[in-house]
Length: 458
Image (cartoon, rainbow, N blue to C red; front, side):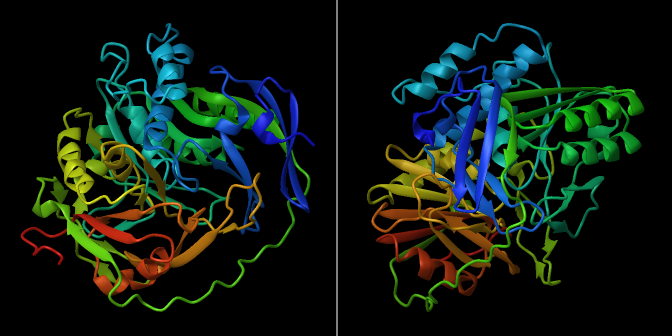
């Protein structure tokens, strides 16, 4: 069997190992940027009876740590493909994006290049994995609206759109947006990290079309793995609803999996007691930087109310494109940069991915980025595998939900910056801090929002 690290996407059929009892065969049909297969993903096994495998992206900064510039670049590369596939124009940005991808010394500024007379879309990123991808993609447009779906229940408002993602570990999605944003005929662009059956996209299109009908949708994804039957299902939907659906991708192909009926469970972790006198520091950025927040609260799965404010610039409640929003992020990153002590890992939490990624991008050299996730993945310490190590912990913002962090290694980093959108009580962080302190010399906890006039977290 060939090693995935030596393969490019010019190969037609490639067999990829996952576990001894599970393997994937992929057939590549289109690779417009001519990236190597190893640049896209590694395989792993889900602890999920609905789907046993997972394409673990190396472009998202979710399960595998990446240089943050690649997470931002992936959205812009998709925007370049959008120009070619939907607007049917040559993308002047394509060559410079490829240069920035292959040459880390080449400059990359995530500034818009798709003019407002060509597109004014509503862009929706799918939680939790594609919230940063959708946000980055949206930054390539001069005009439009971005929002991302959420699994959270917000107390003060009701979702206009809701739909299901059948194969996901947490299936229910909600869209909190003002009605005037959707009550028109603007193109809607749905952004996800991969398209395997297309059912999630079909579900949200049906819900939107039943309430706010329009003529055009575009689905943007890094990987398009749909079978002929799934592609036909999308075509049937187009005819049924009398709409046009286009698809934009970075890699297109088909796959078959050798076994999809394995039943995996997580191995028991060593129990870590709460750290006492550990080397951790808390920072509430809102006390130092003017960060726009929203006085909205939420209710957790176990009916506990979280009264801390949300951050406005995430896009959870919709944002019109404002390309000056990076100003506060650069100021905040400069503040955080002063606290670094060496090689740094920045960690986003759940759906809160884009802003931590962008902060990490501004924090200097030798900074890596990844995020916590709800998705349970079976750990397997082999070179080809996408989740070599795993830690689990109760979500500090909702302790009814277990979160995971993958691929941490001892002595890999000197310090960690853990970013939370909203302030939480210190006791909710004890478990996670105790586990992170095994891997690094110092852990920095960064709160980005909370109630106004709150005291600094000492």
